[in-house]
Figure 1: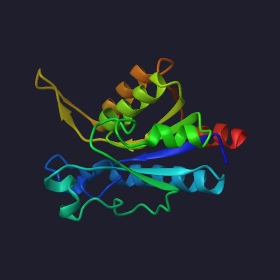
Figure 2: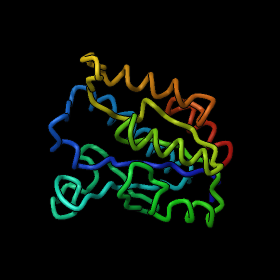
Figure 3: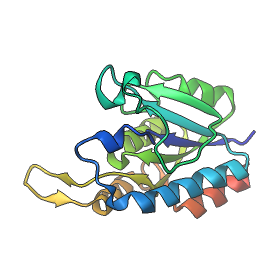
Length: 184
């Protein structure tokens, strides 16, 4: 087994039901996320799917939306469920990774600046080497405290900037797969 795993975080049908859902960036995201999943699968890299769960609303199991986002095809090696922003909290993911000799993570998914960034920071603090694939993350426009609205691209750029060389290596899909393929 590879010493690398791909994390596919919160790529779930819950998001299109949220009021902030903005489909403008979705086609680009779906293409890049699928390329990363397909490339990891072809290289024998475990693909770990993480679903965010809540007790009620669009992220509850009862909603029927806690399933893979339409437009993504995935056959995960393992599925984990989380109730916090970090996929490393209360999921058993860190234990599974350690038991399977995985020290390198490729992070992708939804939302760029929330669960993907938080998981990246947490994994780095736990000693994992992290590759963050910003182009395989999705987020939505956000308005700051000063009333300025930031585009998904601005948010992706900012997240990559604050993670770079502190918590993760920032890579394109192809760069992430190239490096992982060498270790697989």
